[in-house]
Image 1 (cartoon, rainbow, N blue to C red):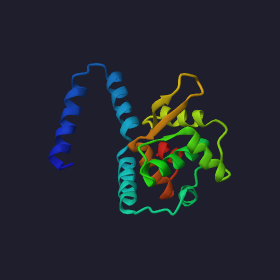
Image 2 (image 1 turned 180 degrees about the vertical axis):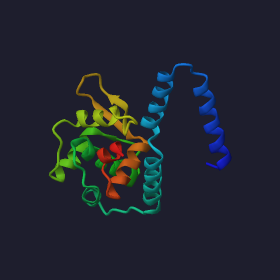
Image 3 (image 1 turned 30 degrees about the vertical axis):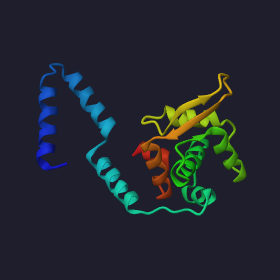
Image 4 (image 1 turned 45 degrees about the vertical axis):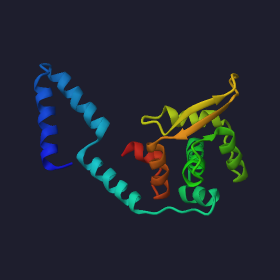
Length: 170
């Protein structure tokens, strides 16, 4: 963003806030912007992390190498990392939950409920994964998933040493 674009954005925000007569409403708007975009320091840290991750080239011999590098902590993170393997490393358009959990079981890390783990990723803001298809009509039907751009970036941050839940608190 150029300085002119930044000044234009700030002017727009200022004019919008001046149009709101209620001081408390102005405070809520500013609080929302800070919660949504973070403080200047947090934005700078995220920008530095994005540059660090973008400059790294990740290459893994197999899913076990990726899993070891990412060190997922939760069942959702485990599913996220293995989903990344199939979608990004194996260049598949997406993946199904059973395939992810089978790979996790081969690693000795199977999750208790793969659908719940994938739903946890989809329910985050921003969503880290999304369900794109369901094969069958029953509740147990095989579901197809795809990681979102934030989901892919989350795995890359994990490999760089920063976990998903830590990122949410920055």
